[in-house]
Length: 342
Image 1 (cartoon, rainbow, N blue to C red):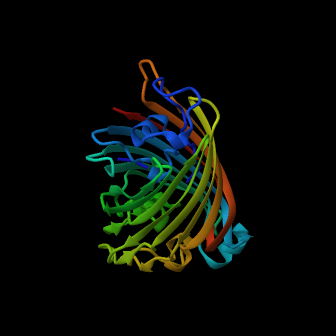
Image 2: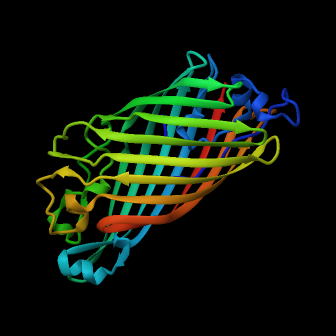
C-alpha cells in the first residue's frame, strides 16, 4: 500500500556480495534489486525478482501559499471581490503504506493505501479568518508492473503499468466555517480525501543504467470513470517524469528529476457546494499544469540487522505552474521513504 510530489533518490548501493566497483550494466535483475538503482518515488523502481516481498512507508508534505491565475499571482483582495471567501494557504500530508510481491521476474503486483491530513486557512470578505481540516484514509491503489522489453542484462527496460484506484477515500468530509453556530458543512473539492470513483491507472516506464549512472522516464495517467454519488467527477491527471541518478558510493546515490503534471477541471458539481462562496468550490477553477524540479539522496543498508532496507529523502519546488485560477499554488514539497525487501 502506499504513496505522491516529488523528487527522486536513485538507490545505487551494493550489497557485500557484489564487487566493490561493480558496473551497473553487468548486473542481473536479482543483483540490480540488491543495488536499488532507481528512486523509490519512481513507480518503475518497484520491480522485484521472483518470490521477493517488499514492505514500504512513504511520507509526503506539500505546502501551498498564495493564489495564482494562469502564471500570475492573484491578491487576496481581488479574490474577495469575486467570492465571499479566499483560501490563503494549505498543507497536505500523506502517510503511505505499501506491500508488493513478485510472482515472477517480469511481474510485480502491489497494493498502496494513503492516510491523508489536510489543513486550509481562509479569509472572509467580512474580515473573518478560519481553518478547515480533513483527515482519513485515501483511495486504495492496486497495480501491476510487467517488463515487456529488456536488453543487455537489464541495461534497458520497458515496463507496462496497469492498475485501478478503488474509492475508499471519503468525499463526505465536513467542518465548521467562520460561523460555528451554523454547524458543519460539506468541505470543498480540494479538501476531500478521495475521488468517489473507480479510476484507471495505466502507464509506461523506461529504465536505463550505465556504469555508475541510471536514468529513465515515466508516463502515469489517472483516468476517472463515471461520476460519484455527489454527481461530479474529478479531472483526469497526466504525469510525466524524467530523471537521472548517480551512484556516489556502494551505499548512497544522488538524483535529479523533472516531474510534470497536468490535471483537468472537474466535470459535474456537488449540489451542496456554492461556487460563488469560494474558488475552491467552483468546478471550473480546479485544473492546471505544473513542472517540479527535485533533488534527492538515497541510502541502502547492505549488511547488519537492517540489511535490505532503503531510506530516501527528496525535496523540490515548482519551476513552472499555470493554474485555472484563482487557485492555491504549490510552494514546496518533500518526500521521505523507507522500504524493506525480503
